[in-house]
Length: 119
Image 1 (cartoon, rainbow, N blue to C red):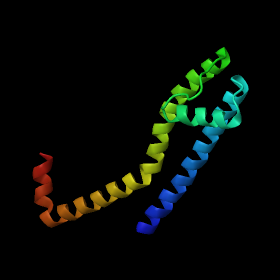
Image 2: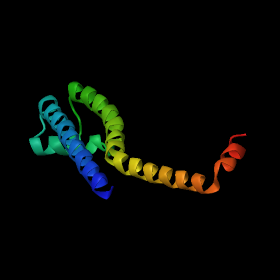
Image 3: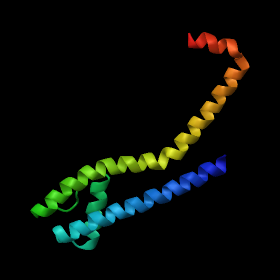
């Protein structure tokens, strides 16, 4: 059971890393083209906006401002979704373990306790 959890956490970690890399790459490319930032500054701006920290460099062109608005809205939802995907195997494992313990408690109490609890 522990191996399965570790395998699922690693798989989801890889998925999250790939999606974050793609989102930062798209943001960096847009900042590079729309605001003519150097690549390193564009990557920094994209990463900071994606995590909700805000831009580092001032945004000067209207196209870059429109992109930054859309990217910030996307980034808020994206970052929280990535956290959920990353933690999903651990939450699933916890709920599965909790459910198994609950079934064992119900078996010990017997069928009469189930009838009393339902009414």
